[in-house]
Length: 435
Ligand code: GDP
Ligand code: IMO
Ligand code: MG
Image 1 (cartoon, rainbow, N blue to C red):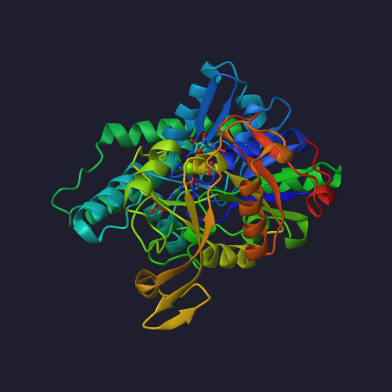
Image 2 (cartoon, rainbow, N blue to C red; image 1 turned 90 degrees about the horizontal axis):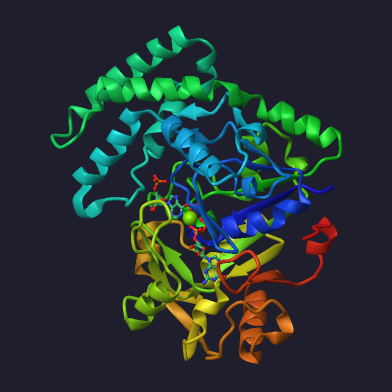
């Protein structure tokens, strides 16, 4: 059975949660490989609604085993709360969840530092989710981080957390408005790590054994390709790798473990947080997309910025992640728009630019060159067969396929699991994904 990576092709919130949930029945295991609880993945079916932050979206499909890899940073209190919240909704979590003992801990001090830095940046803020993701990855890179596996040695864990929290308190002292975590809060984090101990284990070993048995793995990406630390719109990025190629090594598997890459793209674009967004709409259409698409952050509730589909940025994402097939989401959100635009290039100072600029400021200065397409202005909500979509929607999908050179194999026409069109196009079908 094949192993497939699902990644976001834009700035996050493309609908990865919905797509992963749909694909999971065809896989034995689903593993989160990057980020932390900055992610918010929504899954809806029937009248049920889940927002997942650390637990893979596969948890809602009963036969899928879920793993959280070593490259994920874990706020132990947030993970425990998430486990409890999902279990309260009658979904079994603990027996099906394995968390890497190598995953790094997000401490209360990391969260406080993230928030203190953001408020001190004023108008120049990055717009982080305030979940302590950046400081936790910094600690990992500085080699002062603490890994969940220390739960097996409570004395050393307490010492390490106390030492790290002391250092973080020193760092926080530089920010007059910082809220330094209390001893109680720090103790609660330690208790949460200890409570997670029964879930900890070796993710790389578990996945390697699964592969030997011929079981399949779905890698669930968080964030989006354009938020990747190296290739995204730096410094307006997250602090981990978001490209598909990152999935296998982040889980301690060889690159050849990956058989296919599915990129999730919205039919338009959104971004939450600061940073360049050339196709952003600040007019009535932008507001319409935000309301019609319910574009408010799953994690922070912030209104998302909205704009037209940016084919220049999307082409870069296709190349960086090796996207071979596309799941196009939220097509229904464009239903009422009379004229749809796609950015096919940019201009800057009279020069045409066809590649995504390396520098965020250059991207901010770029003006999109738009191709105009008539909107279908017909209801596509909840359509489940491609032939039932309006002809102008067919044309829009075909044009995106042409611009990106990748087939659209799945189209989402509503937030629910059942509101989806699946098209059997190679190479997607060669991954033998059964839905
Ligand atoms: P993720 O972070 O990539 O998993 O995406 P989010 O869950 O943060 O954001 C996607 C939002 O769009 C969620 O509220 C989904 O329920 C919703 N959604 C997903 N697909 C569709 C769709 O095709 N149409 C509509 N209207 N909403 C969708
Ligand atoms: P999912 O997985 C959208 C953005 C933040 C900010 C930047 C850095 O739901 O698609 P961070 O807290 O990571 O240091 O913030 O990255 N960001 C996301 N935007 N969806 C996400 O995750 C995001 N995770 C981080 O808004 O601009
Ligand atoms: Mg999200």
